[in-house]
Image (cartoon, rainbow, N blue to C red):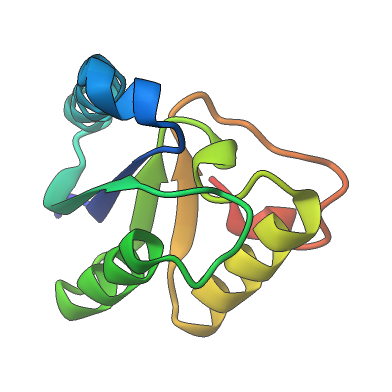
Length: 122
């Protein structure tokens, strides 16, 4: 059986988290463990220091482009708030991914019922 291809996206928003160095490493480690448990093929990873209050962030855009370039099916995050800190932004991100044929997967299987596009979250 062919493994689903995913790109990992890890994000921290504060200098303290970045300086700690564990926040990004912990997110990455959790997602690598999940990928192994779920037999996913990690085809790329993006780690970023950026706020989750807008979507045209360099790291997020890099993850989207990497997923498209590597023919990934999904972008994998530890929690949906790694993509956006606001429900409307998250919904926009999911709609954008859907247009590109991508899904968003959360490490803890979060689904927000307020999202009209929740069928695109796995």
